[in-house]
Length: 273
Image (cartoon, rainbow, N blue to C red):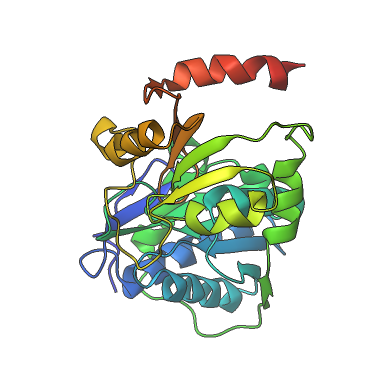
């Protein structure tokens, strides 16, 4: 079994499903991640989540099986979950790491293996990814079934409490258009904010493993449907999420995109208090 086709980059590995992103390669990536985590902690807890892309659930289950075979305790999300919810669970549960099966903002034919460490810090080139790559390259096979524990975990309640803790209880009623890009926001926006007095127009909330437009809100052409709806609905604001809901773009009431630099400046005062 070879790992020559696994190309790690940024905080994990993304590739085309059934081409290089295969179960055999995923097992090697999971085994290498398990071995790396065991070097840091003899009894790690790892949170594993996944998106709604083709075979994401089965890929996540396979990763969990490999980690369990290395006697690692795994808490796997009960259903698909956004990357921020999994990252929060890593921190909330004091886990030693997290694995998320997602290709984020890439087209539908891709899937990915995103890795985080303690405190949900991304595992990048100089923070462990090179070590994982080295281990994966040297592996010839994965270990047989072991004694690790795999439990199912519903992240909804704790993540909702966390996100809502930042929300002003006196928020006025807003007209909002949300483009979920057929990704995680389609499920989780209603779960987290559905009981608020908001008038929401939903775009692309369906989940079938495909995307009406590429789930990358940083590309202006992917915001065309949102812009039209914001203007037609006379909305106060529009929001477009990427596939795993860890990035978004905001649009004002005129359909003008608000740049990430301006959004950072708007939020800086609140988080620096």
